[in-house]
Length: 182
Image 1 (cartoon, rainbow, N blue to C red):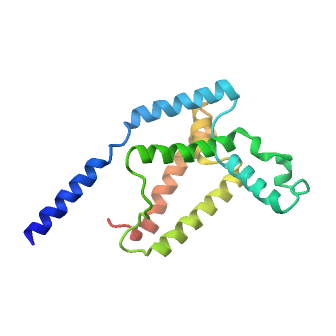
Image 2 (tube, helix red, strand yellow):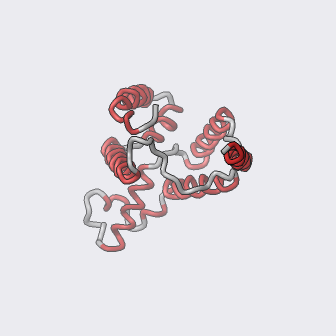
Image 3 (cartoon, one colour):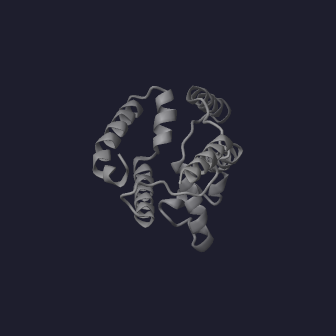
């Protein structure tokens, strides 16, 4: 029994040594700020994600239906994929994937507590994602657009949004905490 525990500890230590540590959060914040500054200087606009996803959805819908008559998707024009935020979404996805592979952290897992099944966790994540996506389009922007772009311009609405976003998340956590090990 003792030998088995030593072997397990050794394997766990070797596995942990393969993974590199996370980036320094201050360095990552400075680089994100620099990216936002370059976006303002080069494109004349800030960062966000919901507009890019809406245009991706318009392209998918356009494969099956005509979107020019659509009240929502029709305003994106005949080639919605040429919008700069569409490229940002792909860059974020592939950049994150590349970074995780380099750091030895690329693995397909589902993080959840012992109190919830994988199927339930997947449904919660899908429901939350749909709700946030709908709300961001209803509000005319997503949290990254509000926090990064609006916050960098010191817009009162964006700063208030972030305060209430954190307060709402903290308050709602009480209702979903049973899903996680505390």
